[in-house]
Image 1 (cartoon, chains in turn cyan, brown):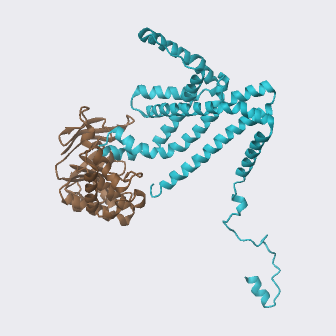
Image 2: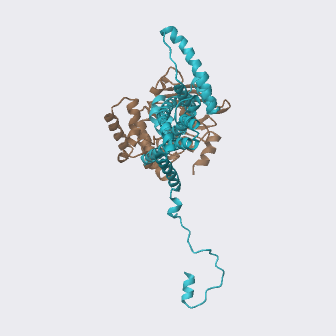
Length: 289
Length: 242
């Protein structure tokens, strides 16, 4: 402004050096290309390309036909493992907060034990040692009492293992969620005469769910991916079928591309769903603390 | 109504928060507890409904010995209302739901009964129009009045107040104290931990001065304000009264 007024009077501009590198002003606006989700475009194009390959290329189509039937097993194992893990996790999570010495220490032992061992050796240990020995023990009783015994298929053993592993992770999520609620909430509930259980169910848990649901969603996706580890037990889910296809045809590229394609489709759509759920939860919170 | 005998509370086995406190509160009496911060006044209050479990001594409320493990503590707590410094409203519930929750679960009232009671109590504390709001949408003073209404809806025989105005902005202190004054005038038995000397002067039958976990002296507020017998009491009031 000063410049123009001086120039308009026909006086030459002050020769003082101009320290401004360019004339743009500070702004908090970001251009569209800065905020645009390019990553979505990239992954979308890769997926489209893979879908195109499967639809047009015979080798890919063959790989798809051999691998896709494993989808059913992958999904079933995921759902079963998640459901069991949810129950185990809730019990172990609350157990750690219990005033009962036994409950507290049993839960703590379980969680620390599981969390300290990588998933792969745990799967072997549980599926090949713990489950058969437990069923043997139970069966000797069941056989004596009812003349009946049961066996667990490798698929169920593997699912149970996954559930036990994720139960320990979820226990920590539940514990953390419950502990994130200020003790004043429990005190207010108890001082009104609500029992411990009523306070937990009506006051603490509904608030804790907000902190619990997003990480539970992440664990659901993680379980889905870790069902691929069931392949080491010979369970015919997607990864195992991919391995078999690649090994028998030497078409490794086709086999593993299709396997990755299926997992990506599943996990991406799940995280999209989770995003919607989380947004809805924050919207419902309007007016709350 | 309330009898504390030789009440002692120790934290970590070494820190004596409260030692050998004897206090009796009669029906309809209003007792205000004052003392320097960390002197154990809140701990004493919290021992009255066993939010804090005493290390030693006995707590009698309404004839029930709370320190006896055979006493149904939930039953007694329903008769003892408590108002907290931080309000502790349930943020996921509306004002009405905050007030009806315990009525329905503990008192076994029907939804309509509980809602009518909530309406009455909200009118009593002066904010019937906030029935459907969430706590977050209310000012601190309004939240504390809802907290009082929530306790009153249980029709308690005793009300405990733990520094009810300490977390409030100055302009909201009066609206809460007004409700408490009215409650005192109606004959409610009240034990109040507070630094509001104006309230103590206007409503308290007895002022109890506590320092280092012990009752230093107690008596009618005017007497203690104007004529404290202990040096510690004098030093404390010199600091807080202008």
